[in-house]
Amino acid sequence: MLKIIQIPVLTDNYIYLLHDTASGITAVVDPALSQPVFDELNRQGWQLDWILNTHHHADHVGGNLELKAKTGCQVIAANADKDRIPGFDKGVDDGDVIKIGQYAAKVLASPGHTSGHIVYYFADSAALFCGDTLFAMGCGRLFEGSAEQMWRSLQKIKALPGDTRIYCAHEYTQANGRFALTVEPENLELQQRIFEVGELRARNQPTVPSTLQQELDTNPFLREDSLALQRQINREGETPVSVFTEVRRLKDHF
Image 1 (cartoon, rainbow, N blue to C red):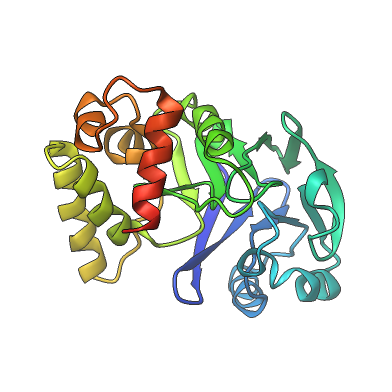
Image 2 (cartoon, rainbow, N blue to C red; image 1 turned 45 degrees about the vertical axis):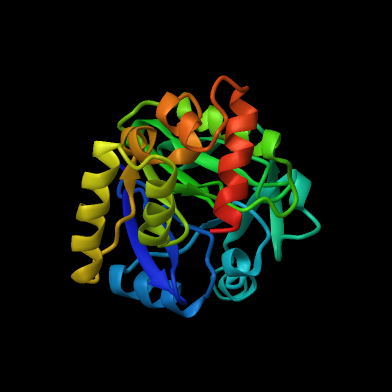
């Protein structure tokens, strides 16, 4: 499988290094900063070939230019964001496939958090690098897109296999869990997961990655079909988009 190294930076960001041991090809996903990436590359003895950006926000692209200048790597990002991604080299669109050595990733457009957001799905490694579209027990704020756009983006992710590991870009899990409990307080899987998350954070351990199945069981933004959730937020029998929109509104004011 693709070797994945998770690098915590800033207050709650995660950068991911991806490495194919057979070819020696290495990529980094959403480098907020350059120095932590250089440090890990040196520890591993790897050379950087690619930067994979999910969207243009500074805490996802802040290391692009220095990494590119010092390694000669190339930057992959959405064509829609070519004017907003520092060092942009190669544009991709929904459904495109890129390769990191022998490992192929399908690009899925996921507008909502931003208009040009994309995610990278490595089927053979059961890994999704989803930036700020999906979080553990949460989803990204709607800065540039609509609730319906985000809902449709999340439907693409929901269709992936349940064992897919969700490598999101932030350690927001505890706070997201506290909100999730307000909209589905009787969800036993959610209660157990919040306990387990608390245990991990007490030991300063990451709660990311989760699995898609965990998210389907506990993430309110993927549970618009839960009757208990619908009743809790007074949206019983409404459309999935309407339920999702209300959950997002409630989270924004939590």
